[in-house]
Image 1 (cartoon, rainbow, N blue to C red):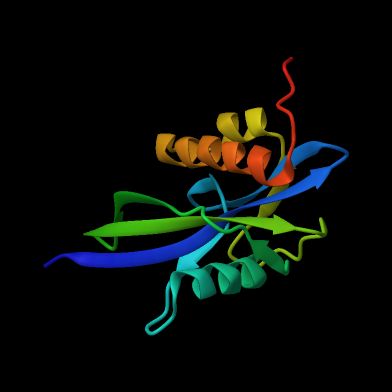
Image 2 (image 1 turned 180 degrees about the horizontal axis):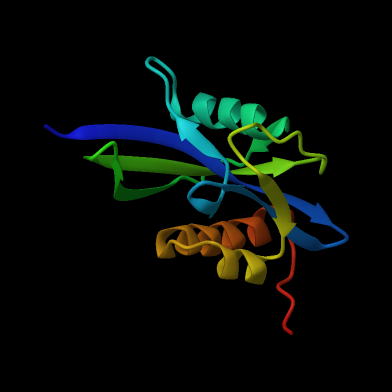
Length: 145
């Protein structure tokens, strides 16, 4: 028997003085963008907004035309679980996070720090696609170090 989960969340970002910072949450599986299970009869978008609010207290705006899916498997109670996670792109206007009990810390991080902190290559790929969309959406110019 296969066990299947679908989750939704977002690459949540904030722009301050032309710099982009991303919200990462730390939980039992390490650093990740906010996400959680999609409920029965709930759209992916509604689940993403709900999960972000539940996990962070933030009200966000989803950016149109960005949707990335990753797939992986993990072990839960001795069973293999196949999970799909759909990530949207979400802008926050506020920085103060009210962290849920399922996470022990959070960080607003620059792109390079996110790339260093997350453990899955698939998440890194989502971040890089999100970065390109943010440049376009926010009309920012990429800074060369």
